[in-house]
Amino acid sequence: METAFSAALPPRAEAPDEAVWLPAARRGEPWALERLYHCYQPQVYALCFRLLERAEDAEDAVQATFVRAFRALPQFRGDSTARTWLYRIATNEALGILRRRRDAAPLEDGTISLPDRSASVVERLAVRAALARLSPDHRAILVLRLWQDLSYTEIAAVLGISLPAVKMRLNRARAEFRKHYEDDQ
Amino acid sequence: MIHSWWMRERLQSYLDGELPEERRAALAAHLEQCVPCASSLHRMTVCDQLLVTHRPAPGALSPAASLALLERAMAEARAGRHRPGRGPTLLAWGFAALLAIAASRTAAWWTRPDTAALRAAANAPGGTNRQPEGVHRPIRTVFGGDTLMAGADPGASEKPPAKPQGGKRDPAVPKPPSGARRPALPPNEPRVPRSSSLRHRLIADAHSSTSPLLAAWKPFDTGSAGPVEMRFASPGSDLPAVEGSERFRKTTNDGWCEREAVRLVNAALDGDAGAVNRVVEALAGDGENGPDADVLRPDRAEVADLPGGPETLLAEWPQPWEGDEPQNGGAEAPLAEPQLLVMVSTEPAHSPVTVTEAPADAPGYSRVIACRPDASGRDTWLQATASTEEKRTRTALVLLGEEVWEW
Image 1 (tube, each protein chain N blue to C red):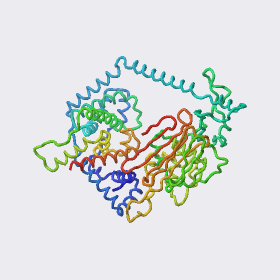
Image 2 (cartoon, chains in turn blue, cyan):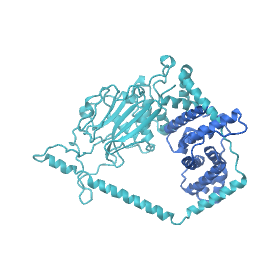
Image 3 (cartoon, one colour):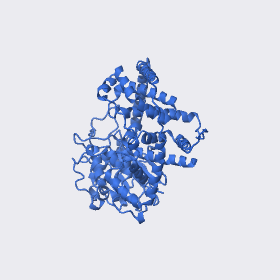
């Protein structure tokens, strides 16, 4: 179903002839693993980058994601799509990094000084600051919904929670983000 | 300001395009007249636009970086598969866990009260014929249709199994049939996995005004009632606390449910997709027309045919305002009066169960107490609470007499 914003988003990349190479990837054949990587690495990297906002952390998360995926592929039953499955692994990896980062360093207040503080830049910084104050779970669900444009069902599969829990968590995340954003204004 | 969490979730689903078409149309009509809801939706929209506008667009990894990352991932994955010593370590941990489980089960088995011996002593000349303090007779909760154990006399219709001698089960005591507690399913009926959220939704959203199944079951004769009963009462009714052997029978003003309703709801709570489907159909029916007479027909439309599956439907139960004109000049319509759903055994409760009334100022409040078999087949009292108090929603499942926990 098309949302108010999804019309402006680029179409989702589909993995061509996945039915051919996915069974081979499950058997651990290198060419198929490589195909899996090339099909989904850009999407996984974008997700990790949006969750972590640092290129180095995102690369680490992508590598860890594919290591886990390559190891677990023989057990992948195909209950969900490969994309959802990879998103789930990537989200868990990114959440782990986010939590460690949150434990290790105090929250940034978002007051970064930039030479060009146009209205747009200021607004972007405020959005980033408000997002940075969210808990990792709330940040993840907002990213999955609004930046990755996943449906509720897909989010439920990625986060491993029920559909009602998705709605509740998303509701709280939105409210929390709004509160932080308005506090900064 | 909208205070009800379900209305905010409904608006959110509307904004995200996740509402079914008919509900979307109903909500759109509602929004035209309801200023608080429209305002709330506008704030959500602005917030979402803000986030979408500033969505980061990371550049793609360079081909060299991408290749290096792939090689590292494949090398690490290959190394992990053949890492020496990992398999035995996992095996050792698994073995240790099995040993611990076996030890705890054995301890629990040997320390349980010898109810047969106590009963014999009580019935002997000079015996008290009463159950001593601290000895918990198992509560016989039965959720099977045909196998429902009739007879309200506690202890008369079934003797508890004797304590095993020498660690073996007494062959004279027949083993209860495995299907005795749950209804048999048609061979190809789909099942949905057990889910705490499913249980929560079924319980917490039981409002009689939108639940003809729950509100309009015929009362059954309490004289022939099985050991499980279900009742519904409004928070204004005089609900008793249950202590010791006191039963729930004395105060109710909304009537008893049919045995089949008990079976059906419990099967639904256990994740039986067909039962979920039938309960949902009944709940989603038009309350003014009364209960759907065909709701119990066994081969009703299967849950697989329903868009989104049972979870979706459970999450989208109709709310009281739906289909009605908005009340109070467009202000938020009040919720239905909260209902209390109670499933009790006619056996004495083995631990005190307190039922508190829902506060009048918390309209989304409901509670449930249920007596259900646990995973090992033994009976367990369960109490679930769902409440919305201003901004927070809290749900708790309390296992009475054992331990208390929440989720």
